[in-house]
Amino acid sequence: MVRSIKNPKKAKRKAKGSKKGDGSSSSSGPSMPAKVWQPGVDKLEEGEELQCDPSAYNSLHAFHIGWPCLSFDIVRDTLGLVRTEFPHSVYFVAGTQAEKAAWNSLGIFKVSNISGKKREPVPAKAADDDSNMDSEDSDSDDDSEDEESSGSGAPLRKVAHEGCVNRIRSMTQNPHICASWADTGHVQVWDFSSHLNALAESETEASQGASSVFNQAPLVKFGHKDEGFALDWSPLVPGRLLSGDCKNCIHLWEPTSGSTWNVDTTPYIGHIASVEDLQWSPTESDVFASCSVDGNIAIWDIRIGKAPATSFKAHNADVNVMSWNRLASCMLASGSDDGTFSIRDLRLLKEGDSVVAHFEYHKHPITSIEWSPHEASTLAVTSSDNQLTIWDLSLENDEEEEAEFKAKTKEEVNAPKDLPPQLLFVHQGQKDLKELHWHTQIPGMLVSTAADGYNILMPSNIQTTLPSEL
Image (cartoon, rainbow, N blue to C red; front, side, top):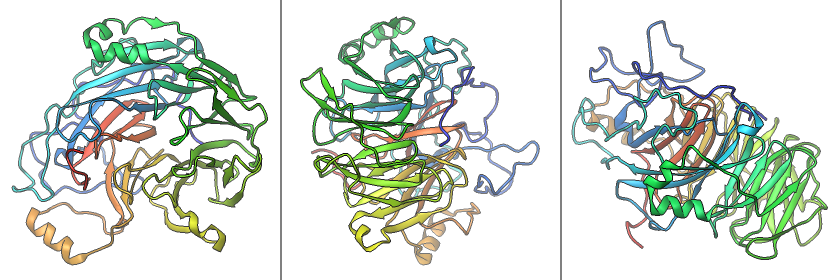
């Protein structure tokens, strides 16, 4: 249950030299063959530093918006359902973890001109080709200490928020409607349509208003008995919301109009400890899952009462996060405080052992997990070990194919031999990673938040079978 990054000082970015594991690259190649560095296994000697291989990314950008953010969400937009051409633009909502409660705010912002280039799965030239991405780190030279400015120059609108923001989620069907969980114990629903419209109409005007904080009233505010982190909008019923708290209570929100909700004050109770995450079923409108510090996952059906339909032991430690696969609805992923994460086939629950995959790669708590919206077998994970990993469950070892690939690329990287074959990509360079999201409209794009800001990344080996246009 490692979550808080209530940091008294803004994460500062250094302009001198290359940071460990950041997006910077050196023009002079190493004198020795490169080696893949494994956190928790390898140690850096004095004077050594990690360097990013830019050829591993189609695009890589970093930015910050002031105070650290524990939670954010990507806002669905009208720029195109499937976008594959650079440059890209992305809309976000986020919540701060400020030093004082009164300094917190909800941020609505847009990052534009996200540049990059497409790469072939097998490079035409050797690995020493010095072609780099356009502006691979959008703020690597920015050492501004202005608390009110966006490190990326992204247009930003801020709404005052009482207390730190534990989690924020945008409604899929009506993305301008967002829900926030505060450490004061309140869940609030907001209408950000005016701010999103301002960002869309005039980036200059939106940037000029970045220093001001709007005092906006929420559409509705509900008080739990304690703070919480679990929050999820239904993907099937517009406006239906779940919120879960640290007192093991889950409350159901039913919309009564476009701007009002009826919150059931009688909670769903099936855990004996804090409810850490909630996930609605992607195919059954009345079914949801919950996970808890008690190590259990529960499956609920709101039509049959306030007790779980079934509950089972999922991990030997706190279950921090979950993700229900929207492309393969029988698959549920969960991540634990002990660093493990598991994949379950819910069709096998009645047979006892529903675990179809279990990974012990990470050695620190799992802080976020999410299935890809474009590939049913792919998911991404963040951990307190400062790694974002991407996994493809369909992968298996193929020694002949691996040897052929190394011959074509003239590979000189000494890759570890004990990595799981399903491990597709490892991204490092962020400190205290907290949450990640795939972009549902830009295949292959992920965004992550950490104590020192955001990364937008598109790994070059993430392929998609989607057409360029629908």
